[in-house]
Length: 265
Length: 301
Picture 1: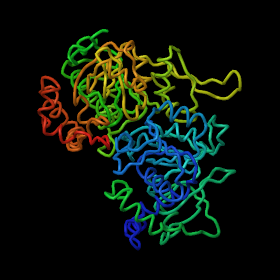
Picture 2 (picture 1 turned 180 degrees about the horizontal axis):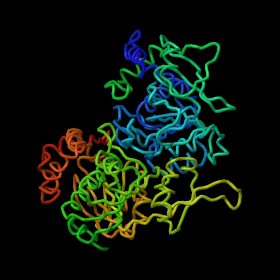
Picture 3 (picture 1 turned 120 degrees about the vertical axis):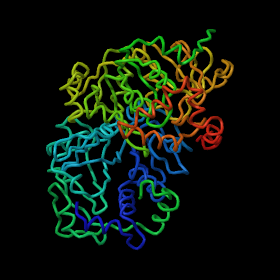
């Protein structure tokens, strides 16, 4: 892990935290009127931000069976009843994951992960330390289903070398496995679309499916990103800067969406 | 109309060692806690447990050493932490864990509930989740095939029919008509796949009440064998519109569960050291604490 990078991102930059840049960059990937299956954590924060700003007609689905809730208290997890408030529908896995996601009407699957590789494959099951000792985590839950079936998949996570690996310790949720196309893999949807970290926005080459840098967050240096990415990253000639969140976005994040810093830190 | 009301102890006495039990909780919501505690008090052995997203109810049973096989889609205690006992048992391989996903567990129950022997699904393909299932004792439950009509690749899942499905609901009548408020994950499919279906109700109501809101009945009486009436039976997990999760007690639980040497102390104090769920409720703060957790009528938590 690159100490310089982490230190920079932990610092408040004109009052803006790394997690807030991530949330705003994530929100901007969502278009108004889309249907999104949302994982808890920063995916939830980013999608709520999108809905409260440029995407008021977003259809907001939680795997557990909640549609379009408008929580007024930050939920501590997907099963927290805070997530049920002002919903337009209370339903089930079968409905959300089956009759929306597998049915093919979900535009975006928005996920967090423990590890990712350069083809957007995700690991949420286990980590191995250097001695080979295995530590188990949450497993798939709706992650594999979402990654297998949503039209495009957006992943949001901290930028750390040990989490952005040449090969994930366990392939829980498939992206472009082995660089192969989705139909060849037997999967629906177009696979990984964006990886948003606290340093950069990364996309995937439409032909080779390999990771490519799309923008760097302000004050983040390219050499730090390269140093902290464990898989090959294609670098464009001109590297745009990720736009900072607007004052209104920061206000929404800090005062309304996650005032206790449960996910924004 | 039958009166199916029983105590949790009576119901648990009828469950043989080695049974396959399905629990209706999800992380920190509507966990079958009163049932999990009683299974531990009666020291049932060699259980197979299945659940979509395992939570506190399953973590208790695995931590108490009652479980030999786990069929699960994922697991967590949300921001309170991971399911430490479950994860530790997987690391030491003291349980045979079959990992699926939320949708595939739900579909296995759905097939079981529909009286089908298998069901096709489009997830888990091209993942290590599937490779691991195929390489272990779950190999008999999964099969790849191409659609005979379109040639598209599918995963076939064997139906899952638990011996006993438990589900904690807000409201049931004496005959077992059960209503669930809020999200219901795979509760309906899991319950209806069960060979026996046991409902734990926060509130017991008349059939007249059920008849006023029949659209809310998720599990109908003819599928229900017994109703356990246990207010605060899901504590410290949440029951929407009844009470919030108990954050203090969940933190206390996780503090014990994350250390293998401290967990027996939790079980001794709160489970084996209490006669029944009423005594457990007294121990965790009694009426005053439960009143603090009572849901706001508008918010539902």
